[in-house]
Image 1 (tube, rainbow, N blue to C red):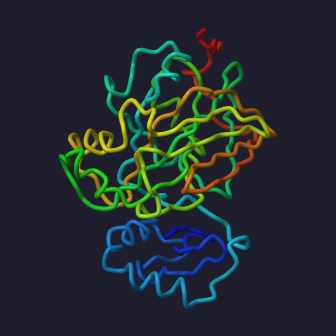
Image 2 (image 1 turned 60 degrees about the vertical axis):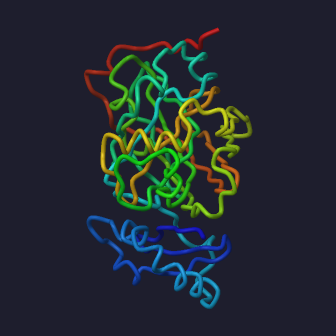
Amino acid sequence: MKFVRYDGGLVGITDGRKVVDVSDLCQSSVGEWPPVGINRLIRDYPTLRSELSQRLLAQAGVPLETVRLETPVPWPNKLMAFPVNYHDHAKEMASRGLASVQGYFLKSNASLIGASDRIELPDLPGREIHHECEIALIIGKTCRQVSEADALDCIFGYACLMDMTIRGKEERVFRKSYDTFTPVGPWIVTADEVPDPSNMDMKLWVNDELRQQANTRDLIVGIREMVAVASSASTLYPGDIIATGTPAGVGRVLPGDVVTIEVANVGRMSLPVVQGSLGRNGVFEKPYEFVRAA
C-alpha cells in the first residue's frame, strides 16, 4: 500500500492511478498544525489496514496526476541520517568518517519537501550544492534498543530521499539543513511491498545524465543495523525518518536542472532546481573548491 500527503495536508492512499482520501481515519485536515495526522495513521496502521484496503478498492478517489504531492511525513520526531555509508562514496570523498565509525546525525525537519516541490539553492557564491541519492526508512512504532533481528518489524515503509548538501568543511548538519534540502516521496510504500530491503536498487539522474546507481547490499551499515544503532541512543516513534546514506557519484546541481530519483519497488520522482535569494551568512562567506578524490 502507498500513503501520500497532498493538497495542503490531506492524507491518502494510492494505487499509482488514483488517490483515496483517508484523512478522517487520522483526524487530519487541511492546514493542520502541527501536521502530524499521518504520524497517527502510521501508528494505527495495524488496526486500520483492512479498512484502508477496502477503501482503496471501493472508492473512486481522484486521479493521481491531479493532486499536489507533499512530503509524506512533514513532522517526524526525528530526521536521522547515516554519513558515508558506501565504500565507493568514502573513496570519492577521501573520507575515513564511515557510518560504522561516526553513527548518525540529525537534519532539520524544515528541510523536508515533497515530489511536487522545488529544490531551492541558497544564495551562496563560491559554494557548490550537491545531490545525494538515498532511501528513507519510515519507522512504524515506538521502540528502543531494537535488535538487528527485530529491526525490520519496526519499519513501516520506504520512500525515495535526496540529501542536498553544501560542500565544505563546516558542520555537516548546517550544510544539509537548508529549506528544501531533503526531498522525500513521492509516497511511502509499506514494508510488505518491498521483497528484500537488503537488495534494493536505486538511481539518480540530473537531467538525462545518470549520476548515481547502487544497491542496499553495498551499504556499510545495513538497514537492520541502522535501526538498531539509532534506537540504541533514542526512542524511535511512528513517522521518524532514517536516511540510508549515499553511494558514489555525488555532484553539483544548478538552476534549471531537474533531479530524478528512482528506488526499485518504491517509486520515482523528479524535482526542478531553482535559484533562491536567501541563505547568506558569515559561515559560508569563504569560497570552497570541491575536488573529487582520485
